Length: 245
Image (cartoon, one colour):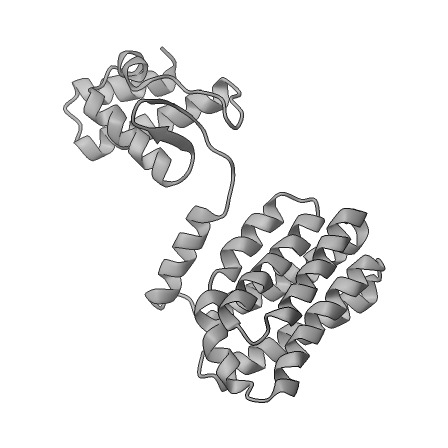
């Protein structure tokens, strides 16, 4: 029994509160995943095996599994062996949404962070994108143009566009960060779009995306940064004009 196991077992025999036991079990399971060098898709021990290993009740282990599944560390389902989950944006996006809805952060603060990150991803995209990735970006820009009068559909393409740029960086952290930060666009784009009343103003938004995609395709870092900067300047101005702070 390793140190993490002993800590849980001692807590159980010492009459520790249930919440403390669950937290200790969560840490022990995380330590097990790390110590065993498990990868995405690898199975973890069963609840019963962790009960024996940690010296706690099945209820404690079951609750620990629920916690780890909720934060997407493991995939667990009835009748199936739990396995290690892949790294994605779901938990971060949920936390960010909570922060926005409870006014712990403002939309402009989110956009400030997005701008800082995307000014970097667009540079890395110019450096590291593959020909296929560049073609996909151009294709998404075309779809934004095709659907620019259908704000819901266009927003999904818009999110895909920025996430794809992040993937072009070939740094696995950036797509997760951008995917979580762009989820707010589903709430803001319909409101902001109302401020852009003319077809000319709406097509200007499309042009920003096309310019960024073309610059990445041509590996023109300077032009890509210029287009992304202009995109965010105008986007943040539209947020202010729409009443977001």
